Length: 210
Image 1: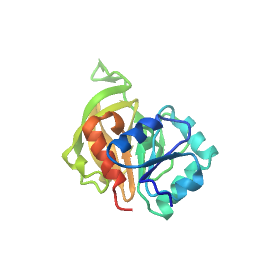
Image 2: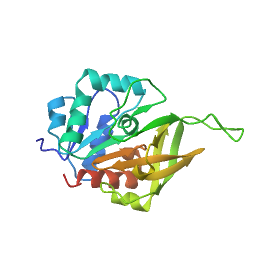
Image 3: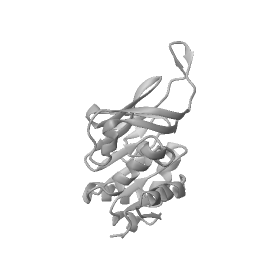
């Protein structure tokens, strides 16, 4: 098992350095790796991501990382957090692509509508927004109080089961800005860009019981 508090999955998609630096700011160590064996042995995993859904899925599959993440989550039961596109990847799939996601939490990502009540909705949703708690969190108890976070996304997660919703946010439609089921957490916003709210959350996840 790796000695780092958190292992960040490197599959060529996402700004990994900013996440590692944010974890360092809260006194937690992070290993960035694309080695499936290291992922299987990790204590906690963060799956980041930006860009298109299918491209990310293809990268995870071709490198053996998707199997390693699923093994760590399902067989070992370690904490796994999907961040931004990573949150969409832990779901069953997305309207953006045709390939299946990791399926760790049932549900899909859907595109924000272009108009709401005949008014244009700017997509992507970019900037600060509020998150309202739907249930207590095992991995991020600070979310019980809600907060304001920084978002950049065109697709929003709609879980199959609303019991998996951790926080709700609104941008033309109500959507799940974070989800949690068993040992899996999904975060749509960028915690590393969300100042004290995001840093607190990352520190909590990195300290979560393994």
